[in-house]
Image (cartoon, rainbow over all chains, first blue to last red):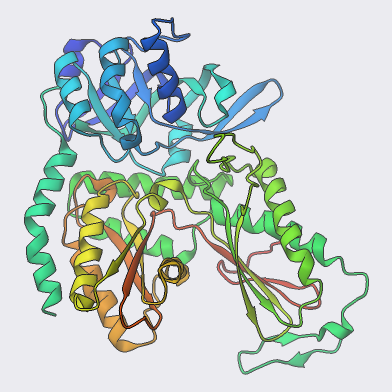
Length: 200
Length: 319
């Protein structure tokens, strides 16, 4: 398995080098967004309004962190990924319009996102779901927070990270999805497994 | 110290409530216990879950699956050492409460639990997760209509047992209920379980614990599936036929290849537990409740003299 160190900003050339199954560590800037932030980004895109942060060549992280107020500052305690599939209906347009290079989340995404990744040069990397303290340890500082009115988990947090990972490339920019491949394999086995367990 | 009576063969001692110190503030005690029980639950997995995860790591043959399990084990250790919640999603807070019919101040338990959740949200902290489904407003304190979810059962005696069960949204979203035709019966049940696991893929954060509730009314089936998740991993069903079905289904689930986080591998589930109720002749309800690998639960018993014993984690002081 190939181990790769990535830094933001990520060029199209570097993202196209990634293949499903690659083991990646990311340093630089990651920006969190989950359901509400995606809906708001979509609204901004539709109304041609400027978004108060740039996702161009950046990593977007499906995450609603657990943060604690510490004086005037925030402390990130736990920041594991959330289920990416909830963002499936938005993500292709976000990639197309905002130039995101890497989406980080858990559980994988669907065909529409996979096609947008192939078309515009982006990839999806899985961070181990629930490994939230491990993730928080790799966050070196909070650069900024936007859209706090959406609530703490739904706000857009901009983190500086150092060797954020382990990340596994789940969808690459060549149209391959590890999730679809695992799923196809399990579906081929499914009937046999069911028949075996029924006959037991 | 009050005179102690022997309760049963398990060497449990209690003091009847009539002799309870008048000045013991039970509500305050339960509130404090609630905070500490939630803290224990979200920061430290029970020993049976930790052991199952270590076993899964040892047995996993898929290199990507192995990376996932290694990250999980590292994360558990970090959370435990630093007393930080294992996962940022500390769930919609649920409690299973067994309350002795002779327990004093019955009416104050709920208030104490609610106050405890409010405090825990700030003190631990827990992520605020109670959202109004119509206005989308987050209450920011984990309290809302019917939330925390409290499942009551009344038992004999005069002690109180509280299980804190903070369960994340990712696994909750994959829960499934189907009312099978009685003719489909056991075969239908088996098919439904395996298909649900494959459908869920990586979304409930495998390796999961799978609770299967069979029979009863539709709501009862899901309740039983959830109750099955409370049973320790190393405990099979007391009925040997059901215990065998649990083993067969677990083996089948783990041969699907879904693997840790749905990225492929041998460890799709750590355990599969079944609970059942008798059913209506016309219906065969089957509910499947997924629990993520971060299977958080903590249980304590409050005795009448104010003593508190932790049942889920060894030698833990909760007050």
